[in-house]
Length: 256
DNA sequence: ATGGTTGCTTAGCAA
Image (cartoon, helix red, strand yellow):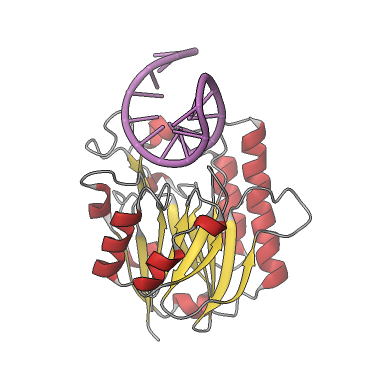
């Protein structure tokens, strides 16, 4: 089972690249973030013609997440549904081929110390509570998405320049670790120990040519799936050429 | 301290 996650930064602006990438890569599951479109306007027919079902939690202008799958998505659920502020479309989950799949777009956090930063930390804690309330770490489950956290300094091209930013601050790293402590493994780190692998480069300041990147997009798996994880990769090529997303797809392969 | 770029929406926000 090939699972991928990609912050496409507008599914409509990226549709030609998305279709070409699906055709070339043929993942069984692709989690999308920042689709920036309401559910009713999601290009479901076009993607169905390409062979993919879609479970969508959309929203106009900002945010929005989806899960594309070759098998039908069952038990689709949108949002944290915990009674808290759930206005932003940042989570959708589904059961696909016996695996629980979550596509998450964690809040960026604005500036350290801001209200948005507090919302990010609270959202990660709510995500941990959501997992604890709705799933088991002993079942096959993947949490995929733009988690907006570089877990360690080896995930950052210039750690000193990014220290104490919203993507690297000790508080967000701790918050992500608490989510993982529920029972999730970083599949990428099962197969790669070195630094130098990034999933996002800012559009500005020639960040990609300078390779000033961070690894903030992740595929996290529970133990029963992690032990079946045979490969993991980041498709850096997807950042090249005309009109790329600022993020690239991250992949993990699971033996069936 | 600010700006740089992209997308949505149409001047300004978010990332």
